[in-house]
Image 1 (cartoon, protein in one colour):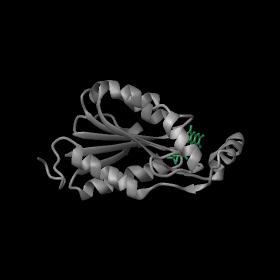
Image 2 (cartoon, helix red, strand yellow):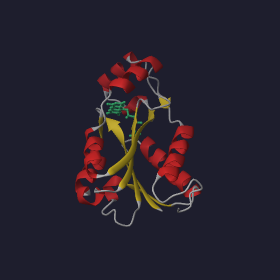
Image 3 (cartoon, protein in one colour):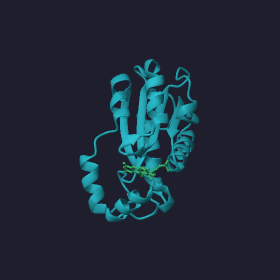
Image 4 (cartoon, helix red, strand yellow):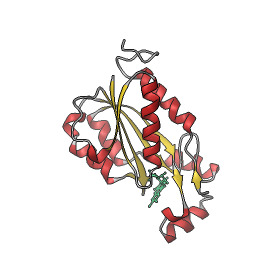
Length: 182
Ligand SMILES: Cc1cc2nc3c(=O)[nH]c(=O)nc-3n(C[C@H](O)[C@H](O)[C@H](O)COP(=O)(O)O)c2cc1C
């Protein structure tokens, strides 16, 4: 299988997750290309697309949502695995655990992912927590972050990232549990 891992990042933590997904998928025997979403001009040479973005204001960054629009016709029927990198991941968070539990229940999917579901065969959409430093927030954002029990640092859960890559390698059509084509 040839897999494209495309990403949009503002401060780099999403790129790190995309790169780790790529290297994990390679360990499963897949041919992998990891690219910024803004550099992707076609999808036809890939069997599986993994597309992810950092979250700002509840939404994917423009580079990722623009890619969904730009490549709309090529996404039709493609196997896609989507991921979002925010303050709250499925297994870790940069906020207080209590608030993270509430937010993960009430936060709607980013619009770009909802749109992607209308074109592609979206197998999963996973949230990962990213990294945040004080300088990343504008002044007011820093205050809100502190009020939300936020802590600065890197909350990426690499075990969860690698285990999601294993799920992609196992459940994508045409790939057996050992990563070989079935
Ligand atoms: C301007 C700004 C807006 C953000 N908005 C959100 C948000 O709406 N929800 C959220 O959970 N995290 C939000 N975050 C946190 C980022 O999603 C998180 O730090 C992520 O790791 C950033 O990924 P990156 O390092 O690839 O840019 C925001 C961060 C910044 C700097």
